[in-house]
Length: 280
Image (cartoon, rainbow, N blue to C red; front, side, top):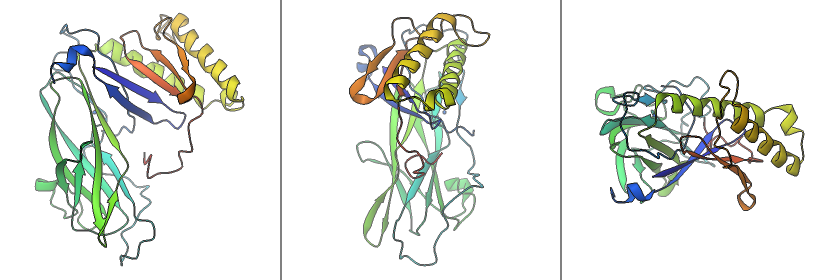
C-alpha cells in the first residue's frame, strides 16, 4: 500500500492513500497531526514487533473549545467538529480501539460515525456514560463513542460524523486514521524530524516573504539539502535523492523519505482559520 502525506504551513498533516500491488491482494494521546507512508518491505524486525505508536488523546480535554451548546435550536451555522483519539498507528497488532469526539454547536439525540462509503461505524452520545460510550460529561456538546478497527495491514480510514438538526443532515469535517507497519523505529523518528523541519521552514519569514515561484524554488532547495546533508545531528540523507518534483496543477512539491514514504508539501496552503475543516 502507498500512503501519501501532505504537510502544510498550518502544522496539519493531511493524509491520503492508494494501494500498492502487494496489498491489493489482501483486499495513532495529544497529537493533531495526520501523516502518510509507503511500506516497501514485509520483513518483520525486532524494532517493529509489538510496537504501537499512538498520537491522539484518550480523553477529551480541550480548554480552548469554541462552541457552546445553545439553549434553542435556531442555529444559523450548525457545525460538527470531529476529532479522534488516535490519528496514526505504527503497530503489529491485528486490531486497535479508537475513540471519536464530535463537538456540536447544536443539540441532537445522537451522532453517527460513517466511513467513506457512508456505512455507519458507531454511534456517539453526549450522556456522560463513560463505561459504555467513553463520554466524560453529559450535556456538554461533545458526543463520544468508541469502536475497534482492523490494523492487520497498512491502510487508511476516512471518517465523518453525521447528525440531524430540524430534519437537516449536518456533516462534520473529514478525519483520517492511518495504519503503518514494517517501518523501523529509526525510520519513523527520521520522518518526524523531516516533518518538523519542513513545518518550521514553511512558517519562516524567509519563506513566507517570497512570491509563488520563489517559494517553489526555496522549498525544492530546502528538500534537496535534506536529501544531501540531512538535518541537525542527522548528517545523512533524510529525503530520498532524486525523488523531489513539482506537481504544478496541485500546487505541491512531492518527495519520498528514504523508507519509501511519499510526501506532498503544499506550496501555498489555503486559509486554515476555518476551525471546522481544520479543528486542531
